[in-house]
Image (cartoon, rainbow, N blue to C red):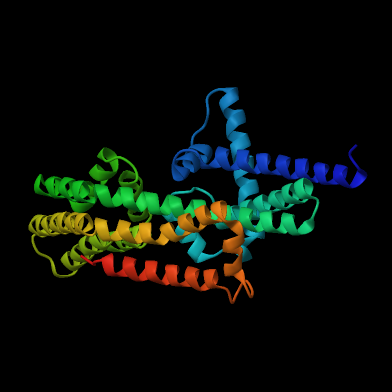
Length: 323
């Protein structure tokens, strides 16, 4: 039989769930497609039929609510989180991201509290839930950066070909934004948008380099910035940069192949003691319990774990070769 306290917790859980669904729906409605183009269509185009007018009004109302919400919570803004959201290509604001983390944490608190009946479990689950959006954000950033790195040589070849055909550098970047697949197309579309809003092309490319955090892209951006300052043959410069990056990519692949054995040996040596310890616990638990005497911080396994972590870090540092 459900007690009154459990009923309050369940009601609170469903209220949080309803708020989360509303917030998610509003974010999806405002974040689909190109944000700039959507705002232009909302305010600049006049719909011809009544259903389109109704949708436009609803979207305009949601946009105004979103602007007011962001204005009210503007002290929560952070340049670091804003840059991370741009790197992940998530079309939400910093305040919306923080509100989402708070909501997920509250849901985790209620779920842990209801399922276990103790506040400590709820707090622990809330802490884990608070870290989930950050982990997702970092994984999305890492995945996009790796995909962009794989596309960079093709991007340079396309830009070089367009420049040799008589296009300007900005027109060549527009060709990349139109012909390449994401994430390269998305990032260079952002560069074109920033230039259209009045930003200088070298500065827009510097912003791109800050988002992608790629050494090869830094080389390309630096060479273009030098060209804008001192002049020269842009096609020849891009050809040299493309060849340099191609050779660096080839050399880096060879180095990874050579160091594969060392890296995986480090992983195996780090995991093997835990596997052996688990098997020995299954075969003779009384013998293994003596290792934990006299206490959890002064026992042999604690020192072994510290040694394993240090050894793993040393092996990975030795196997890491900068190209």
